[in-house]
Image 1 (spheres, one colour):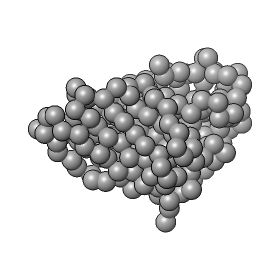
Image 2 (cartoon, helix red, strand yellow; image 1 turned 90 degrees about the horizontal axis):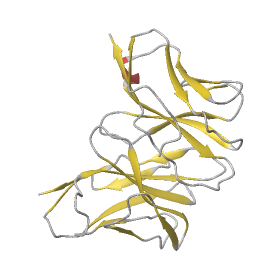
Image 3 (tube, rainbow over the protein chains, first blue to last red; image 1 turned 90 degrees about the vertical axis):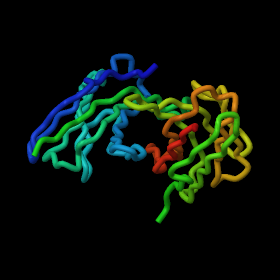
Amino acid sequence: DAKTTQPNSMESNEEEPVHLPCNHSTISGTDYIHWYRQLPSQGPEYVIHGLTSNVNNRMASLAIAEDRKSSTLILHRATLRDAAVYYCILRDGQGGSEKLVFGKGTKLTVNP
Amino acid sequence: DGGITQSPKYLFRKEGQNVTLSCEQNLNHDAMYWYRQDPGQGLRLIYYSQIVNDFQKGDIAEGYSVSREKKESFPLTVTSAQKNPTAFYLCASSNRDRGSYTFGSGTRLTVV
């Protein structure tokens, strides 16, 4: 079973910020928080990952709660190309578990 | 550019036939994975391999077989024992110390 919980769907307007939440209350100390997104009929695409500190890259920002039991993926200005299913996944940083487990993710709709 | 190549993009199979899906990567990644995705669902792990000549069953391995004779290649055979083979199949690879997974563009298999 997936170890994360995400809303089934979210909606945003173009050029507005989007905050995609993820709960992972059973996270262990060595689990990294990964985010991927999947456009229709394509393979998932890596977005960002982090362990404890907030992370930024050209695609998005990842805000991690102090207790690490939840995180938020932030798209600063949504575009129509950001419409996708977003998956929040935990990955063991020690490499002990190579089974990346996907839930159903959050389907993001971006309105023009 | 490095990446993962899956072929073919679309595949049609008659009931009772085995079919092999190709997955090749030139990223020098140690680990490779096969996932299955059904409409509106998340990804489910079929098989994974962490090193050459070794692989492990995932959550839904029944009716599938794999081989890992070369680091670059991880073909998946869908056998006639798989009762519901029509699905979108995704191959991925990763290195433990790099964190992220890279996915191929997928093969859509339809049983006719």
